[in-house]
Structures are given as structure tokens and as C-alpha cells.
Image 1 (tube, rainbow, N blue to C red):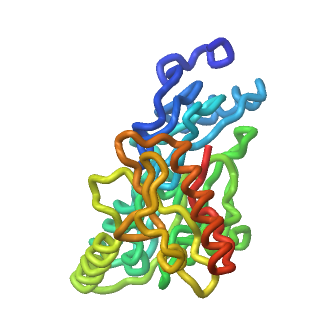
Image 2 (cartoon, rainbow, N blue to C red):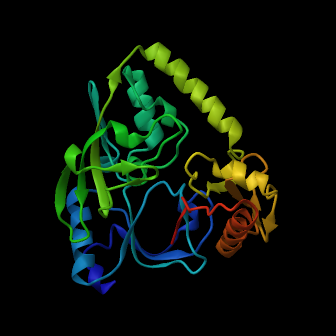
Length: 292
């Protein structure tokens, strides 16, 4: 750990990444860092840049498949309290990139701030949600975002204001290494009515997804005007299995990993599904899942 000398308290070698992802698959990170302060985070990023060591950010692990061989370089997770803080300044919420998206949503609802309740069942962290512009058919997090504080791969802290931000379906211009903090400007509404809407959205989304105890992940983006899950079902692929990886019977855009599953099983099943949907329906599915 020579190049990370001085960071021994916050860096571990060969950290198993399976425990940090929803699939619970994949090999270890060569180095795994959990900084406790912004200063430590910046220092680790700069040290990696100086030594040309690759760095990856790990959020909630809900949209990630790690290869069985693991990943080289440094994986950073913003698990410390400093990166999870949420501050309410009506009609705005200022939240750290490591804050859980669900907690940001419920905080807004309890304070009578509308706009995010449709995102209640979306897992992961705010940073990950902003990076991929998480959303539903009716809303996305980007439309409420007014600015963000980021850290570049060189370790520089920068501000991205609304004019600098561009959000599209499942993608954003926030592609810097770290999303440190963001401000969301919402609309004031009745907290009780918002709570009712939130509960309804929660029930609907949870009913359509794999069971909570299952190791699973959503795989493909919805093509314009279509839904990936419906296309996969139309291709007759619900329940299709390779090794321990299975196309979910509850929602065909989810792959469920059974106990004997490997990351390679999931990759092979993804290739099979893409190929069959293309051959049978003429639609090329694009991955939403991030693969390391």
C-alpha cells in the first residue's frame, strides 16, 4: 500500500465487493477506501491521480454487477456521516452524495416538499441517482436539481450550476468522479397528502419487483416509447435461466441471482436476453446496469 501511505485507517486491501451490491456477486476491490471527511476524500483522489491508479465510486450497489475477478485500483464509498447529511431550506433540500435516495425523498415529504415522492422505491445514493438521472415514467431527479458540488479525477472541488447541468433519460452531465453534494428545489405541498402519494407509489413499485429477500438487479433501459420488461416478456424469456441467474417471473427486466450464481452467469444471461429480443422483436436493448 505504498502509494496510499498515511491512509491505512481508511483503506483496506482486497475488500469483497459482493457484500456491497444488491446482486451480492463479484470479486474483491484491490483497495477499498471509506474516507471520513472531505479533506481525506480529496487527498485520496489526488494521491491516486499522482500515481495514475484507477478510482471508482461505489454508491448503494443497486445498479452494479462486479466481475468475478474483482476490480483493480481503488474503490471509494461515501459511508461517513459527513457525506450523508440532509439539510432542509424550504423549498430546497441540500443533501450529500452519500445520502440514501429514499431518505432524501422521505425527508422532503415530511417537510411538505413535493416532487420526489415518485422516486420513493428507487434504491441507492443521491450521488448515484444524479449520475444516472434516476426516475420513473412521471418524474426524474434531474428536473429538481439546481446545482451540485463535485470532485474531479484530479481531486479538484468544483461547482456545477443549473446552466452546466444536462439531464436525459438515465444519463446526466454529472460525470465527474464524485458528486459531493447537490441542491434540489422542490414545491411546497401538504405533508399528509404527500405521505399518501408516497405510500401509494411504494406499494405499486414493490408489488411489481422481485421479492425483497432476493438478490436481484434491474438490467436494461426502457427504449423510447416501450418498456424493456414487456419486450423481454413478449420474447418469451421470463424464467429463463443460465447457471444461477434467472429472468425474474415478477418483472422481466430484473435478473435474480440464486445462491450458486456467479457474475459470469448474469453476463451470459444478459447476452442471451439482448440477442433474443433483437432477433425476435427487432429491438436492441441498452444496459442500465453498470458492469465493473
